[in-house]
Length: 110
Image (cartoon, rainbow, N blue to C red; front, side, top):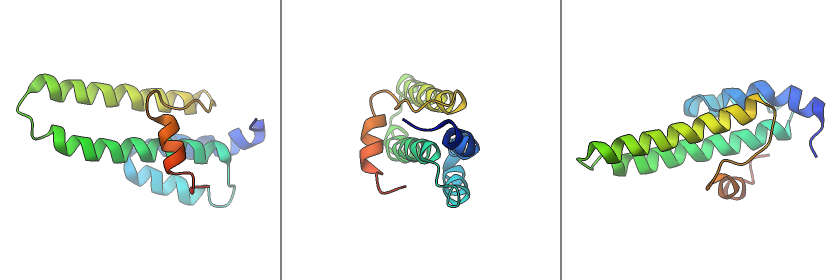
């Protein structure tokens, strides 16, 4: 279980990490001193989402179908809102479907 002080010290970094890839870099560097596990959890989640968004977004961009494009953006929008809201509510809940994968894939970020 994560201590309340760890959550409080890492909340700002966790929230910043969901603002594009530059937010991930800023959050990672700002968390280097405090080493909050709460912040690292959300940094891993948002990094995974951003990388997946770029990889799949490039592929989806080649489809000439508005329904596919809108569905793609809505799905990722919901996942980002979910991740941001769990950081805002000071919880460490993985993003549905892919959150546990991101935690394992980026376990070296700590």
